[in-house]
Image 1 (cartoon, rainbow, N blue to C red):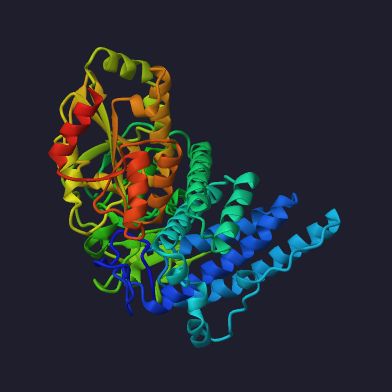
Image 2 (image 1 turned 45 degrees about the horizontal axis):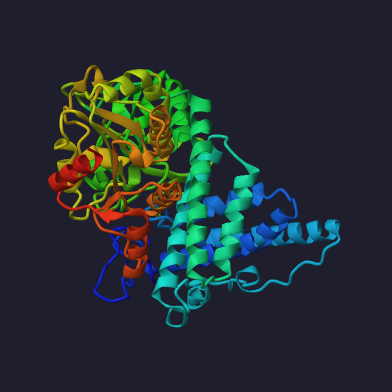
Length: 556
């Protein structure tokens, strides 16, 4: 096992960073991790054929659909079920056969001779798991580290993790009905490039920026698909304390699964709560119209072991981030869907959530109403831009001195209290935009307002990064300047591969002076970090109060 893709990975003073154990820090065992690597290798083989077919004009959307889903399952804290990866490996071989046939048939139709490919395009997984694990090294991106050097390996990993995050966002968009053939083809092109095991550092850097641009388009597609289906989020007061009655808790990111659960629980006397990254769903008109969507329960993903254990109903995890459900003895009432999985946890793969309903009715539910408490969310780009004139006037008149984007992934490692300290110490004449589960560190704090404009604007989940970017770009247009010229500072917490994709997007847009933490990615070498610091002024977070003062001074 070698895994270095998330912020909690093991770190050391030499190049052998990463989890190289029988069980990683996230709880994933070496067997599952190695099977995931083999799945990614086969996905690269699919892309080798798919990219070539795409260049010849073939429709590759069906191929790319499997690629995105498969890549999503390999993100941190998504799927821990080794048996599921055995199945996906077998499916990947079948999809690769179809990709090869598509490529060869397209060549014949164009009068061209197909290339004879090798490596990931032809590797056949053995029949048994034991034999597969014995060949796991074939998939390693660090296999030739001693030959190509640490910098090349680091950039390959940056590219892979950015593509994983991009694939996850593309899968979210597809579930909502959003697809784009050009995006599908470009995803395959980047994976094909990675499959060639590139060694040119500048080419790898250029490709990473191209993945950032692709991810921007994917997030735009995701935003359009979500708002097209459920309407634009609206500023909404959301209850964050329980109500008496039977209950279901839905976590993750999948609003389509949430909608299905809401429809299937109508009239059954079951209250539905969001959790974690699904909090923003409560602001969408197409979802908040259900009266039994009564609020949000709990906080960020890393607290789920305690929160799910205390929740007296059924729990559904629709996407990342999942933790061991048997440690605190709620695995019998936890369900997974989509790319998520854990051995011996019931999986819903057909949209029929009746087992969840039955489990909820069998549990005691909340015995009484708790004291009412509310937070406000729903400040996505449509809401904020609807009052853009007011915001611009407040900036021109000096009422708003600065904007801070404080958000991203949360996690359990030390150092994340920085974001609480930062947000709560921002001056009263500044506005904080937040998104992602990092908001739970400060979203119950009373920030007040500036002339009726709330000082804390909850833009949404990590999937809504496009909203924050669109707000920033709109402000830049209003002041006829670049984003870097705005009184704006980005303070981003990262944890896993979606965050890697978002970081590449920000860098590809030329956004500088990003504060990133609580630690910088371990897969980036000192040399590579030096490049990012020199070109983009990327910097690690420091002392919260000092960082605020520096940002305000730089903007003045």
